[in-house]
Image (cartoon, rainbow, N blue to C red; front, side, top):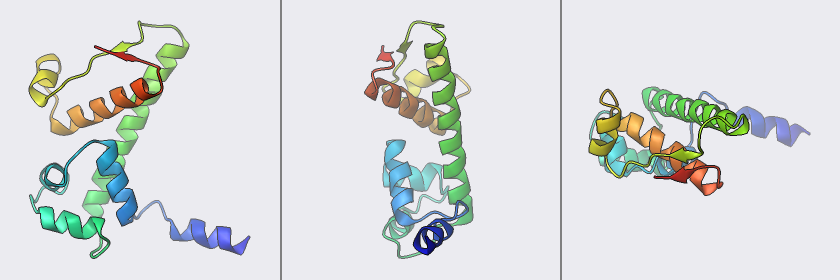
Length: 133
């Protein structure tokens, strides 16, 4: 029982380890360069790699931004699943191959918005809940 408590305590929600950082980068299908530019806002790819390798601590601002992205993704997923469960709409979701295509439909959307949208679309498709068009 003590082991479970210590494990839970050591995995605080206010911090992020290198594995979680990598997992979120992959969930949003972002390269290290993209993350360094759009999330860290530094363009320092080597610094991002050091975080992913556990060599240096991940800055709080980066953790906060990624957790906010994860939360937006979760809300979007739940909203679409609720519509599917209530039979509203046609279970088809647009897939945008690039940022320009996304911005034709969502002109106010930015790179991060596009990555969150695409992550939701691929997740729903992977579970056979949506078709992509």
